[in-house]
Image (cartoon, rainbow, N blue to C red):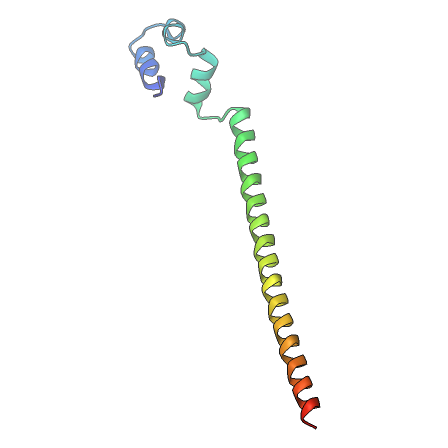
Amino acid sequence: MTVLPFIEAEKTSGHNVKRACELLKVSRAAFYARRTGTPRPRAVRDAEVEELRKERDQALAAVRRCEADLAAQRNVTQRLMADNTRLLDSVGQGS
């Protein structure tokens, strides 16, 4: 729960912001930073890291899909080669 509305109401009522922040164990810098709406550097950095993680996860998922597709193609190729070998052997024996 955020204490910002309470401190803002105290400020509007003419009470001391410093005292309200002390009682609620919030720094005045944090109160004013949230009040102005500017994100803190750590919040910006966390958002950037989260975006990078999403990109990494998407790239890994694409790699896994490619590996699965290659494995499926490899299985098809092996099966076709085995079938072809069987056919050639049966044709060779019939002559």
